[in-house]
Length: 473
Image: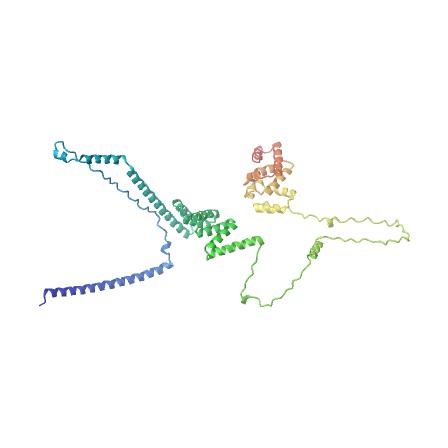
């Protein structure tokens, strides 16, 4: 017979065996589940590599403000007032402490008169509100920055600039927002705005190298080559391994050298298998007198005319000089041909086609070589109503001065002169051209206006507008 103790030991042993079996089954199931999850995760990663990644998803659209901090509970402990003692309770009156009651009354009066503690609590609450507002603005700025980065990846630079601007309005102390907006300005070719944003980013953080590089690119677009070179050299000094800055600096120096020295053709370093197999020839360098070349070129340019002259034998003093026969008079000397001395000027034809663009007008006007008569004929055949399209970008100062001269040389005031003066005043930057006239041009314009005032028989309204708009000091 087993005792009660042995029976309990047997039951405990069987229970432990069952627990171990249950634990083994549980761990087997857990290991199999983890293996399945790893396999599924690998398949998901492989499928997402070809498709869009979670990083490409847009950020959260709505901004969620952080919760406002709770105000501190104002549990003001009021001093307990002693209960009133009845007049007939002599035992209570015998136990009443007069000094303690007087001290309590004095403390209450001090608390009522002194409100400094409440003001300190109000100041603490205001500081908590300011900190909460700053935290809200910073988180809102990060929210707009995330949206700006999203639009930048999609190459929607205008929307990215808008979101970066909102982020700057929320937190103007972050240099990242200015630098990101400068990058978008650079892609939009707004070089002036890009330079300003990069300068602000550098003022906020002088160690931000990307701002220097982006400002250098903007200054290259603006034509500020020296300042761009300084920025690139600073970037290379801080980051010697920056290949982009090195390549851009080499490109800037090369373009600057081309502007100073002209076009440079670099030597082509061909591989050995593509080089010519012909033997090289040694060329001897000979010095040539440059004076001979200059004299030969001068003689080629000159038209030398050699005329044959009949020479007669000069008699000696011992022999008498026979008189010339009367029947054979000497022929008059032949006059030198004017064609050989003065070549005829090259005749330039006047263009008959009416120009429709400013380029055609400038080309025809330059081909006439400042010949007043031909320029006058060419200008008079252009209808004044087409001036707005031909001079859509404004008149050149030299062309305007020439037109003033043509107007002053006209003998009669005709309708074409009035219409041309009326239409030219409507071209862009007319007032600017009028204000920068020299004294000679002002005198020519004054003579034309005086003639218009005298002869006012044609279109008085136009003449009055011309006199008002062409008024000079």
